[in-house]
Length: 292
Image (cartoon, rainbow, N blue to C red; front, side):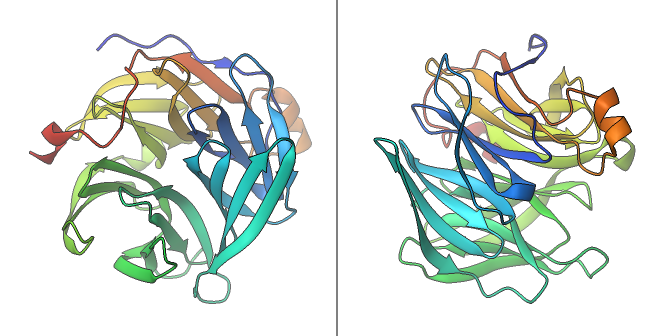
């Protein structure tokens, strides 16, 4: 695989903690987690602030054009934008312990929402992998995770799931009814290289993984790193594949924990970046070669 070109900043805000880039078929979306700001960026335009909740937001997940699920601390809400009208409606409150939060998430093959619960820092690694069915039914197929991140489906029965604090990207196998049949280690990132954070899977089955603290996005196939995109700032948080023609990589970053001096010295930290990686458009859950 050839090395992708260097990412360039998009026309948009500088986030404190940029996260959850998504392509909904018509526009890019992402969050500034700390203030609950939701941004939308149509092709060829600058990013627009859609709303600011004032509460910690964890992820957005498109249900279609301008229809998304928004995770807000321990709740899932439905977000709809139509003709300039923004509607945010409560959907499901997840029963997580006091002091816990939801983190990254995605939509499953059947339209269910998948996310992870995160215990407070210093607590035991006891977070759950959570599934919320389209009818609001809640289940926890797996548990024991310290900091759930980066969820993405390789195919209809295989979910990748990063545990950032342990450096492990897990591979979970399910039946057609989403009963867990087994979990195995897909990839382990040494701590010196950064933490595995958000991930995305392109139509060819290539996995794109953000390295928080590692100033890079990795391209991975069958659990092996095949390419690396260097980022100009260390806190690389999440990635998405999309764009009108497909093959665009959108990358969020952060300036988490920066004081004023460091923020001024690293002006690209917290920006959102884009580069073309050459994937073809199409569904993402077709990577049968990754099941071997």
